[in-house]
Length: 182
Image 1 (cartoon, rainbow, N blue to C red):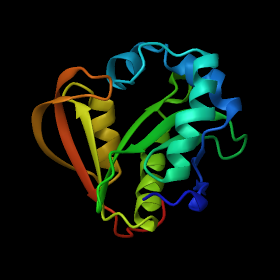
Image 2: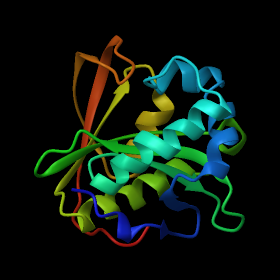
Image 3: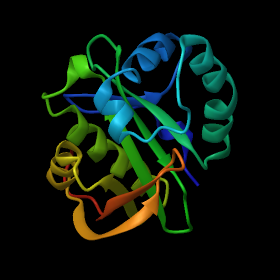
Image 4: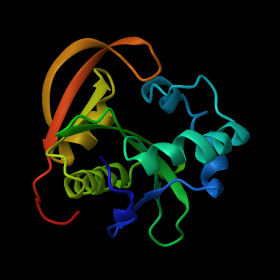
C-alpha cells in the first residue's frame, strides 16, 4: 500500500503532492491538450473543473487514503502551482504502475523525469520494489522521460489502456532501490 504521510516529496525541479481543489481548473485545462488526449489515455473522455473537483473530493481522496491509488500533482517548487499529473495505480504486493502527463505550458524543462524519480522514491518508501509503466509505441517524449529516469524498456504488446482502448504499448520497469536524490 502507498503511504500518504510521506507526501509531499520535493526536489529542485518539482514537488509531488496530493491533488488539491485549487488544481482542478489547471488539470481540466491540461486534459484539453491534443498530446494529453492522444497519449494519456485518461479514464474519462472529458474533464471540466467541476468534474475534477468531484474526483478530488471522491475517488482521488479515497484512493490515496486507502493507499491503492495516488492521483498526484506535479507542482512548481516555488509557486506550488499545478504543472502536471502523476498517477500510481494497479498495485501488487511488490510493484505499482505509474502514468503521467505534463501541462503543455510546462513541457521541455525535465519536470517529468524529476517527478518520476520522486514517484519511485515514494513507491520505495511505501514498500514497493518495482515501478512499471506503459506507453504508446509512438510516444517518444514519454519513452525518453522514462529512460532518463532509470526505467528499462521491455517488450511491446497490445494492451488495454486506462481509457479502455486497445493499443500497442511499450512496457517499462524500474527497481526502486535508492540511486541518489533526484
